[in-house]
Image (cartoon, rainbow, N blue to C red; front, side, top):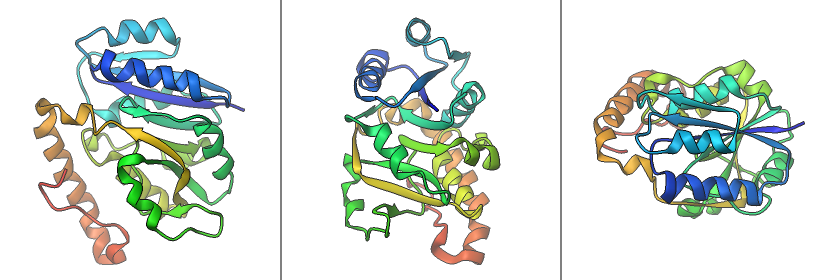
Length: 233
């Protein structure tokens, strides 16, 4: 049994991607394969990817995180699947602990706690010590393959914003729990790639699509599937 760790990158090779993959190798003891996707970078990202992992793929032009993660999902062979953003710094034993806590059949998605969202620790713990959540970010997210087999790929209309929230909503509608594992804390370097101004308009378009897709659910389920206001990224 092993995990496919999918890391996607758009530029930021030396300041984000190389340190991220160094921490994957240093802090991961559970058996894994690296699945690396270059989302149209203009630096040497793909050359580096090919030097460290056979499961590497290049998208010719930037298509967004949902498209890139889907490319990774098509290559992934593991019993477990993890998404790691290249602006995440992992901590020792992160994957082993996530998998140990996500063994329950009704847990569909489990996530680490980013240190810039430490306020989430104030939420009540479930009986199994996890924190129930409406959604969790895709920066450090784990799911068993059976969940992917049921829910499918990410919505590429959300390639630049909201794809992780959408996936969590779909998992919950399918009857799965979405949980944070509070003892697995990772460092998030403040949305490294999302800060790129060239992607701002694409993020706005993704948010508009997300609102159109999930606003009808609010009339049925109330606040169980919250939709952000326009302008909140």
